[in-house]
Length: 493
Image (cartoon, rainbow, N blue to C red; front, side, top):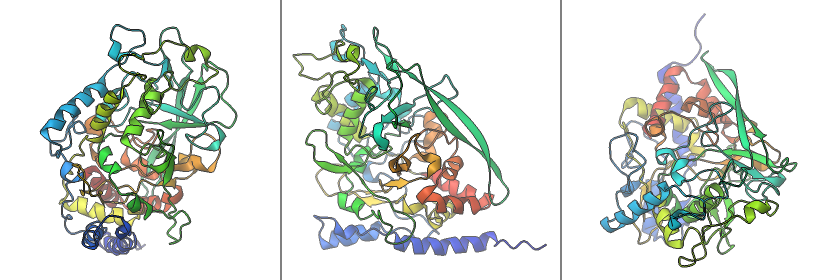
């Protein structure tokens, strides 16, 4: 019987045509950006237009972070270099911030006055404990290994807006001496086979989370459990410099263009002013700036107060009286907070200037073919390839960057939903893809998605659902050679 499937070359032609059409349709209206001259607006629009020629790399494509990109050889330290465009004087602040990021905090009172204030309840003693090599955290590996997992809690079916009345916004699995941890998380995996169109069989795993040894009784009915793994730290300062109007131009909450993609921005309150801002950071885009994200991590993960989150007891609730009355690390001669603004400034500077590594093999024919397939499958409908940052005086001003994200929230389907009810539990911010091909180099293993369930990039793609279902199905319909080419492209990022 004759094989009626199209030949590999003919299929690639079909995909290239689709990619060209998609590229033209997916061009954001960057000319809306305030403060750009007509000439600059035209330049931005031209340079950020999605590719239609996949025979060679685009200009500057290897420089994922613009002038901030580092070109050091790939290895365990690939996510540990300073942005290449910061000045010599700023390197000292970067190094100081790195030392504070790595510092282990201790409980109060302690002889090391500048390092006390840990907890009383916490998940980690240092920022670096979760971000391994400034990359991803480690996924749980079986019932008794929590890895770097953080379990977010939210009552009322939303996320990050209504803390659980007894346990707050995050389950704290560790405590200082004299206190009791809120509980622990037991993770189990169910494996199941998936058959791709060419007959290839692969195995996915689905995690289930069970709360054990809860210190304050059951969690409230309706509280959503949202597992989170630490995401990579690279390029955070560049993300903050993307113009709000550029992100707003990508929104299509009502799917007016009929492409099945209805992403929308997360709008959050600034902790200091209470004003609304665009959320850019975290799996739910719940923080608007590197500083706010850093301060929230100090509070929720380590139990330290800052001027943005001034509660010394971190995520403790009013019902946890022992936690609320525990000693804290405030030093009168340093101010009212355990993490002073000077310390927060240095950590923020460090986190905002960790360089994106240069891409590898951008001119490799298989990588270029994989790029065409990535476009043709519709992946750039959410993973927007490039932006030009805002004009200004800083080092990250007016840079062409390649994050491969629209930073919008998208419905990713029931398979990736949190444990709970409510429409918002299915939505996730599109994660940037820059540096994703160096995951194994940095972490020593691979784990992807918000909870680390995907052990390979192929598994991560096959978990896509909801608005990403069409792109997933396009990947599943490819033969092995085409899938490998697309994966080669991702591994070059």
